[in-house]
Structures are given as structure tokens and as C-alpha cells.
Length: 364
View (cartoon, rainbow, N blue to C red):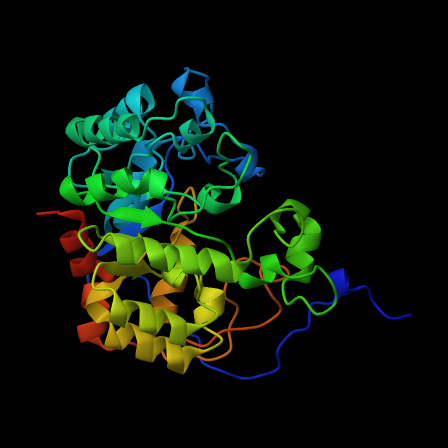
């Protein structure tokens, strides 16, 4: 009898070197992580209501012990980390108290604005701008826009709101005026927008998490979301956009290269996309080298595990070939392939690890 696909875990018989990289070339800034109580430990992300936190509901922090986190970051050479979970109002204050104010220079907290307001009667974009201004004054260092803009937020008529919706333009303009970079995650992997069948390269992941599929219903296509993202960047040249996860389209690095070349206000991070970059290592290394001043390091894994940082250092710095994109045992979580490292030179690694983030985030 043939084994079930779940039981098929082939072991590579290639004899290859495995490079241990315990520390990055220079102290690193993790520019994409989640330390708050919003995403936390939940699975049904698009069903979350951040207003629950604002109303004071108790939820677990994604990091239980801040002191232990700092010790683990010291162990792997991470000098600062971005917390994207600030929300607004009292919840922002709780994040700032727990991280930024208690440990200056180690944490950078981004705020949110309550985009769900666009679905309520009498929506006033100026109220969101004022919320953003208050968050900046309180100590927020950036604005996080999540993928629910495009895939979850609906207006009063019930229609999904896209990132370039004119009703939200004042918020993005204000971010630029206030000196707040906008870290935006639009869409999801291309495979999540395709039929969940035998041709889908992330079939196992989608069978395990069917709510991650955006192929049916009234969701926009992936191409439409990318069009909206580009229109947003074009409309706000005075605002810096950190477009997460390799510009939200790591499956097409030619498109990412065109975007970075066209829009001087665009920065990308590499978080959560080793699996995509590592199966096209030469193209990935070319892209990062060409745009070395516009790429940020980050892992988007919470609470941040030291072995994953070291895995990223190996991926960026060594010339190892054909290894798992996750340090964890078991079947690959995103797709059944291995990756090869990028072997980036020092004059690329330094800005990617450190100086780009310090510039974009306004760190001294």
C-alpha cells in the first residue's frame, strides 16, 4: 500500500555542508514582529476584533516574559525589534509601557487606526487622522496596515474596501506628514487565491487552514490587490511604505524589482518568505543587492525563537544549498521544497540587517 502524503517525509541523500551562523554579520534590527495582544496566539486572524482589546478585554501577550525575550535577542545579536501590535488609545499605551518606555532603544511599536470605522454610519476620515496623530504623540513610530484592508474591512454597503480607497487617503497622507512609515501587508501568497486542488503548490497548508483560502466568495483577485497597492504608493509619494513579505509578491521578483525601481517611497522586508526567496536564490540575491538600501530584515515569528534567527543568518550569509526553510522537524509548512542560501556580501548584509531599518524607523 502506498503511504499517505501526510506520511511521506523523504530524506535527502545529498551530502552537503551545513554552515552554523550563530550571530549576524552586524547587530540586527528585526523590523517585522508581533509582541502585543492582537494577533497573539489566535488562528482565525480575519475574524479578530481589535476593538475588544480597546474595550479592555484581557488577552494573552504573544511574549509572556519581556526580560527573557531581551536575553534571547542578545543571544542572537538582535539589537532592536519592531512590535506591530500597538493598536491605538489605551492598548497602545499598554504596549508602549511594556516595551518602548520600559526598555528604550530595544523596541519600536507601531500603531493602527480603526479601519472598521469605514463600515459605520457617518464615517469621518478626519477622526482616523486625529487618532493617528495622538498615537504618534504618545510614542508610536509607525503605522501598521494589515491584510484585512482588502480582504476583511467592509464599508457601510458591505463592499470590501481596497488599500487605495479614496476615503482612506487622508490617513496615508497624514502618515507621511507625521513622519510615520507605513508597514503594509496586502494580500497573501498567490496560491491562496487559486483553487484548492491537486495543482495548488500549498495544498497541504490550505487543507489544514481552509480559512486561509481567498479563492471563493467576493474576495478580489490577487492581481487586483496588487493593482490597488501600486495605486496607493503612486498616490502618496511623500509617505514611506514598508511593503511586507518581499513586497507582498515574492513569487514574482521581476514585479518587485519594477515596483522598487518606480517608487522611491517603497521599502520591503523579507519576513516570513525564506521559502519563496530560497527557491530562486540567484534572482533573490540580485534583487536584494540591487536595492540594498531598501530592504529590511525581519522574521515575523512570535514569540521570536533564537533558532529561527540563526536559520535566517545561515540563509542570508552562507552559500549552503538545498536545506529546509524551517529549522523545525516535520513536513514543510508552506510547500514541499528546499531552499538554497543567498551568500550576500558584507556591503549588502550591513544595510539589510541594520542601517536601513535604523534610517527608516528614525533610530539614533
